[in-house]
Amino acid sequence: MSSILKEIEWCPGCGNFGIFKAFRNAVKRLGKDGIEKGRIVVVAGIGCHGKLPDYIDQPSFHTIHGRVLPMLTGIKLANPDLLPVGFSGDGDALNEGMEHFIHAAKRNTDVALFLHNNEVFGLTTGQFTATTPKGRRTRTTPFGNPEDPVNPCLLALISGATFVARGYAGNIKQLEELMYRAILHRGFSFLEILQPCVSFNNTWDLLRENVHEVSPAESFDDALRLVMDRFATGVLFKTEKETFEEILHKNRV
Ligand SMILES: Cc1ncc(C[n+]2csc(CCOP(=O)(O)OP(=O)(O)O)c2C)c(N)n1
Ligand code: SF4
Image (tube, rainbow, N blue to C red):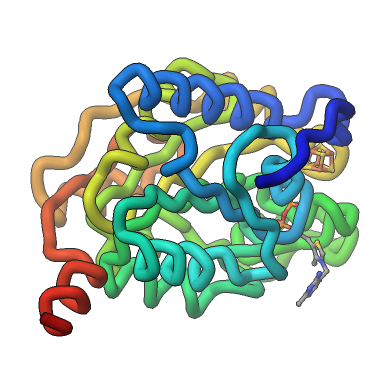
């Protein structure tokens, strides 16, 4: 159990505040449904997002860079009654931890991953990551990023995730609902959160003007089209499939 730090170290105006609030609300709501707080185990990676467990009263683990998903998988395998929830950055999940992301989705591990996508390495002061848009100037791409970005929802979808959603740090109510549904989903739940980093990639205006809510896709092909709209929010795709843990536990008896 983490001891809670009172002083929050995120920059004033950071999108992490909205994500944090939405998660606390989602946990409260799950509590009203009879899900004890102690069953929701939080794992975070290295980065600004990784400080989140320091501020909440939840069983939690601050792991090394890029290793949120192996931790979540181990927790679920050891005790299937737990609901492991991971918080990761775009750098953490899609640079350092890319292979774990694809494999967790492919296996349909029954965990939830919340990706704080601020399109930069925040804690290390603004280097470009796998999701930085092409042409964007960052500390390491002063003439504009020469690479095409990874689309996290598209990657989750084609890798096998059975729940794919996108939210926005500025819409706490919707984010709470998406987190609540992701945690309850049986299988790999992926939630990308569009997150402004006021210090190194301030996208508040861009997001405020462009994000919009959509209805879930009715087929996989439909979902492929939906995830390509980078500002579409909501549950984008949802399906049912046997989970990794179910298969392993069944084969053991
Ligand atoms: C293996 C490894 N490589 C690099 C680092 C240095 N490092 C620490 S935090 C960080 C950036 C984290 O960025 P991101 O995951 O996008 O999270 P954010 O800070 O934006 O929330 C990096 C590169 C490290 N700790 N370990
Ligand atoms: S550097 Fe960016 S992501 Fe990190 S706390 Fe500041 S605004 Fe938030």
